[in-house]
Image (tube, rainbow, N blue to C red; front, side, top):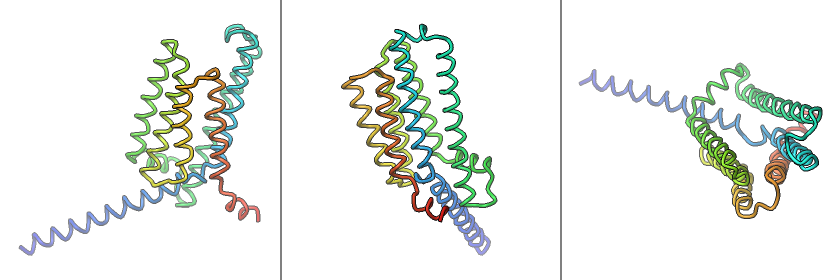
Length: 224
């Protein structure tokens, strides 16, 4: 009997240790993913989403179709687009790494990536993104170009809602609602070309969101 009680106590202790470890890990992940961490990233993502689609739309309208754009301009626009995407990817990665080091100075980027990838929210995010990509490609292949933007916007809105529910990130409410409303609006009222709608919805929304969540107090402390 004593042996059984001792085993139960050891099991309870182990469970408590595991619960504390999970709670600590969730807390660290939550601190890393706070919206102010990515404030500047969201702003410049919005800026890129505002300007690049407008440039592509202007060139397509000027020359009639994509294939008619002069090679020099096509290569230049493609290069700028690829460089912008690469820069934003590096920017976001560095923001995650910097936030992780504030939480744990000994943390390395690869450790943070592993911790984040093990959380259930990231598997769900990947599933949503995969379905969004599939639906977008299907709409594009069938010539329903006006459906691509609402589908992408809806997918992004669901991802932000996932973060909000999982980590109680109230600051994500604005961009989540913006994307939901924009998805419905662009589906019901496709007033402009998909590229212009992209510029309005993603560009405008993320610029406002980036400014709203940016950690201005932290910036003053760093430069003060």
